[in-house]
Each structure stands twice: as C-alpha cells, then as structure tokens.
Image 1 (cartoon, rainbow, N blue to C red):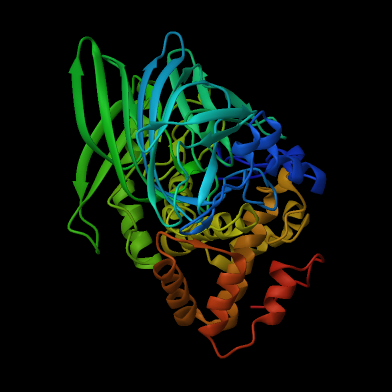
Image 2 (image 1 turned 45 degrees about the vertical axis):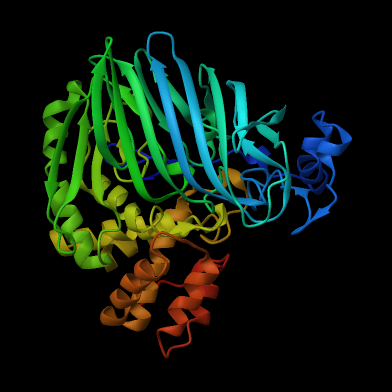
Amino acid sequence: MHQDQSPRRQQRPPARRPHRTAAAPRTATPLAAALLILAPVLGGLTACEGQSEPAGPSGPATPGAAGLGDPYFPELGNGGYDVTHYGLTLDYTPTTGRLDATARITARAGQRLSSFNLDLAGLTVGRVTVDGEPARVRRADAELTLVPHTAIGRGATFHTVVRYSGVPRTMLDGDGVREGWLRSGKRSVALGEPRGSMAWFPGNHHPSDKAAYDIKVTVPKGQQAISNGELTRERTAGGRTAFSWHCAEPMASYLATVAVGPYRTKTFRSRTSSRAGIQIHTAVDPAVADAGESLRKRIPAVIEWGEKTFGPYPFSSAGVIIGRPEDADYNLETQNRPFLPGPNGVEILVHELAHQWFGNSVTPKSWRDMWLNEGFAEYAEWLWAESMNEVPAKTSFNRAYDDPENWGFPPARPPNAAQLLGRPVYGRGAMVLHQLRRAVGDDEFFALVRGWARTYRHGNASTADFTAFAQKRTDRDLTALWDTWLYGSEKPPRPGD
C-alpha cells in the first residue's frame, strides 16, 4: 500500500492509501481462539467428522486447524495443508453483480487429515469434491469445513473442487475501509489486504501460504477483466469474453485481484537488465486515459531503476491498473500490476512497484511483519528522490522524524489489528532502514538489501529473519539499532549526519 497521513491507504499528493487499519475486533481472546478451533465440531459435524479417525499408515487422521493463530487475525488461514495452485473460473455479470464460479485447489497435506478448512465469506457453496469424491461440508461464518470421503494421507497431494455462486460482498475493516469485492455500477475491483480475498474465492487466506494461480474471468463483450500474471488467452463467444491469466510465481491470496470495467488496455514486452523481456500489461480507465498513459510509460524506467537498486525483478510480468476514486480510495500492491484509484505522481508508482520485491516476492510470515513491506516501499521513495531528484535520503528521514504520527508505536510492534498499517509502519519503518544504512555504509547496505531480496525470493520472512540476516552480514553489533528504532517505544534523539 501507499500511504500518507491518515491510517491505511492514503492520499499523498493526492493518493496514498491511508494507514491500513484492519479490524481490531478480530484479535481473539483465548476463549474465542479455542472456539474458533472447535468451530468444525460446534458447527454441526457428526462425532466421527469432528474427531480423529483410527490410526493409519501415517498415524491417526485428525482435523486441520481452523486458523493459523496469526497475532492479529488468529482465525485467518487453515492448518494441516499447503496450497500449491489455485485454478479459479469466474463468470461475472456486472449488471447484477452475480458471480458463478469454480475453485480448483491443489494442496499438499502436512498431516493425515480427517477434515480441513477453507476461508470463504458469503456466497453460496454448491457441490464440493475432494479427489473426485463428494465431500461433506459444514459452514460456520467464514469457515468451511470439508470432510473427504477417506482420510488424506500425510504428504499426499489432493485436489479440491468447490462450486459457488452469489453476489460477492464488500467487507469493512475496523477503520471503515472497504476491501473484498468493490462494486461501482458495472465496474468492480477485488482488493484483499488483509482478509478481503475470502469474499470472492475459497482458500487458505493467510500470507504464509503462497501458491501459483490461473484465473479465468468471463464478462460481457466490451468489458475487460484484468488479473494477476500474464494474459495467456482472450476469447469471445456468445456475446461474452473470457480472459485467462496465469501467475506462475507464488502469490499470497491478499495480492490476488480482478478488475472488471471498460478499461483501455495495452500489452507489450519490455527488456530489463536481468530478463530478455517481461510482459507489461496496463489497464487505464477511459476517464483518466491521458494522465494514465503518461504514468504507464514510466513503468519500464521504474523497473530498471528497481533492478539496479534491489536486484533482478522477481516476476515475469508487470503493469498497473488505473481506475477511479469511486472504485476504491487507496492504492494496493496487487501482484504484478498494482491498483491505483486514478493517476498519480511517479512516487506512488515507485512505492507500489517496490512492493513487487518487498511484500509480493518476499512476503511476511505474519501480519505483524508488515513493516518489512511498507518500510521498504517508503524507503524506495526516499531512494528514488535521492537518485532522481537530488533530495538526500537524510532530508526525507528528517521529515519523517519530525512527523509526530510516526511515533505512535514501534514499527515491529503495532499494538493491535487496527494499527496494523498505521503511520509508524511506513515512516518509522523507513527510518529503521536509513539508520541501518548509516550504520553499515552504502556498499554494505545495498548489498544487504539485494541479498535479502534474493535469499527470500518468492518465500516468506519475519522481522527476526531480517535482523538475523542483517547481523550476519556485518561485523558491527546492530542490537542497539533494533532496540531503539525497530522496537523502542520512546523517540530517540535526532541522529547526526
């Protein structure tokens, strides 16, 4: 996300997304967490469905957990398996908002499973199969519990097919910010940070479970449907057009998107220093076509600069979706092509494309690690201003230091889900990186940043991973730096040059 002064996705000259303040009530008490884990039983399963089965070749079959225990959203995600691929087939009617869809989910069992869960908010679930056999389904709010015909062996790859339909919902976070499926007339955009993707497809909706995606969206002829990855096919028949998108590199579900509307699109190949060519696909709303076209042309240059600064671009495609403010009032770094609610300055593009390295390729292990996304993206803006506009990063640091909104809490310790994307995660997160640069020097710092992006490419990483990674690459003791800038509650004295 790009942010400025108000929480969450903000409007910075004119549109940074405000600090994303996620829903505070989703932090569960111990009793609530226990009830979440027991939800499959309390939701109406029979005794045999909710309990372990007799031991098999790989031990007893047990239910997968109905939540991963995230510090801020303990019920998000599900235990017992790892998704490797989503195949989503979506048939959407903009005039009614109705979605008829099929999700084909390929996963690997981490334990012998008697049942497992998927996250899905709203929508009506029809036929469900696991490995071709009908599965029993129980629902408790946004939790689907699936009981396969036979237990799934530990280490086994299994295939789940869920057919579902309805009008996907718009979800509200604790700060009233909209996510999920956002509909404005015949236009729609799906934005998922932190939990909105469950509004339009079932899955394991936690950033720690990344997967490849194939997303096919069918809409009325004349409409465009843009998603993640590369556009592999576009076919019109019977007055409807199907757009097929392939995202080979792993993606966290909150970064998945679909945008439907009368966009003007362009697809072209662009060379980078590390690749013979990447597909750049852009979609711009006709109402902002001229300004959007100007911003679109900056994409290759920003990626080239990013490669020099952070290392090879981590994906096979790039681009941008430029909509209108009524679609959403914030920017989001959806994988491969960020969504912007209208054209903006190049700094916004720099921020959101920097996320392709930091957040999209190197993805947080939990939502507590969000400063690794937003701190890096904001520091990318400082580095761009330094290299392109001759504004020293020290000047940007001082501005952030003087902003009282950056001192509400330590960037690595947001106090609750409502502050998950509060201003300190951005501004003070960037200050942490600048202080690290001051401590180790430019050569060592930029080598460290490129090494971080390379080592955790397409994986997940935590704050502890980052501090350990940085410490191993220098002979300086960084303990005081982390204690003061990353974890400290008090505002330290302004550092000298």
